[in-house]
Image 1 (cartoon, rainbow, N blue to C red):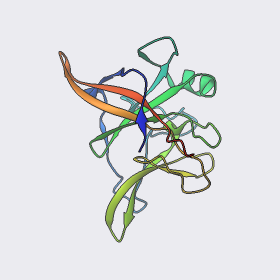
Image 2: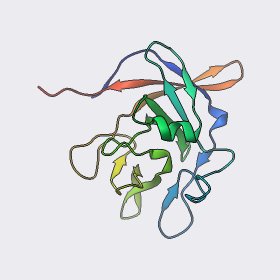
Image 3: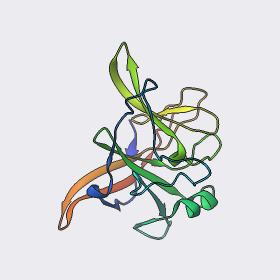
Length: 170
């Protein structure tokens, strides 16, 4: 089991994240951001937040899509979104080729119509990662997941996240 380390970081109000629900079409896959590459995947309000964590800071700062795109490999970023009512937090960069997962596709992992889990697919190369375990469908790559805690605050429910430590073998 993964252990959590480090401080809890405030990631915003839970009400700021609309629930992403599966499309009614036959694919069963849902884009995190709608739109086209030409319009920069624009959508208001955004269904996800991209946050930047400075090593010396105990807070997360939201970054724009453009900032996230140009700094994805240079600074730690966490992607926070709500899928089917559950809030997820993970590294924004695909562990395989550092592509922004905010441009990815979310889907249900099913077996004979029974939803077992959920996944996210990187649009650059098609690799998929389980949203609950971080496991990849190919290779030994693993997506870094963040622990999420929803707390009651003065302005409503607050989202707090902290990085999970990877399980060490041996």
